[in-house]
Image (cartoon, rainbow, N blue to C red; front, side):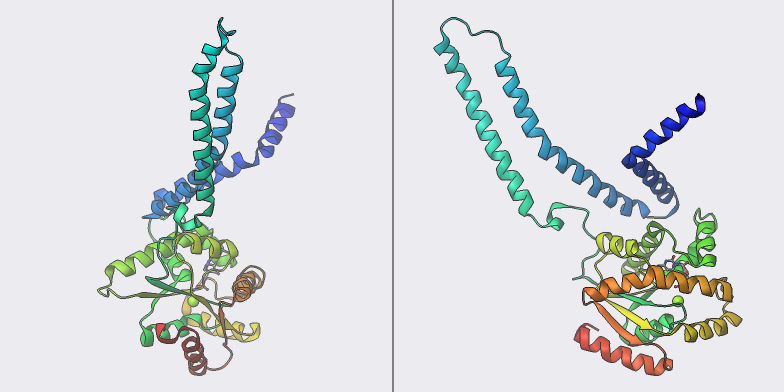
Length: 328
Ligand code: C5P
Ligand code: MG
């Protein structure tokens, strides 16, 4: 009996899909808030965007129900006293108030609909593309993203943020609650939950901007990110829309050769044949759809990463100049 009752309860819980999702998110958000410095600002924006949409829902629903109540109180009132035309005299101001109120509500609701999403929500991205240029740098493992980013930093004063490096340092940070999770993901070539990586990136961007003496426009190369669609969408929503994706295209055999060579000295837990195979699979199944998504929007600069690093860099500069002009 107890088993059947708990089975029914579990089913009911499953059917209440949204409740489960909310609980799970809240729990993981609380964990993140405790663990990652400044992560709370990211969460607050996510929470405020949720609260806003629900208050918008309430705003859309409540006036009609309020009206219904008003009408009900009129119709279920006491029987009219003798001298009905006196009673009519008392009711008309309320009718006018309700009519004005409803009209005002409809006007407000229509104006709100016409407002752009950003103006409606204080939870817009943390950085504006007019202050900050973000280039995502993608390519399979071993495509040479890090090497090319180092060249661009040297010649064009970008700030280079490698998602993989940030995750490795969070993994090694004493007391990090995500150390083991990150370690497992890296070893298996799977993607770390986006909240962790995005919080690390946003913190690193803030730190780079606030420690910089420069007052001018900041340019970031975000290397190895976004590796999954959810990372791409969330980052652009809450951190900063990206200007473009620099995509280094390289055949698997060449990437494998480079990674095995690098593995002799890199000390990385994932530069071995087993992890490399898994990383390739994740790249094809999970990360290539991100490249395709941006290509569909005309935001991909694709460079063949097979030749020597110098030749790849020459092509990189030419193509970036073509697209960014003096913004490079
Ligand atoms: O870019 P890199 O090769 O240094 O990334 C190493 C690992 O870090 C990836 O295989 C993946 O497990 C994790 N990672 C991630 N999300 C990213 C970048 C890296 O989960 N955006
Ligand atoms: Mg790298």
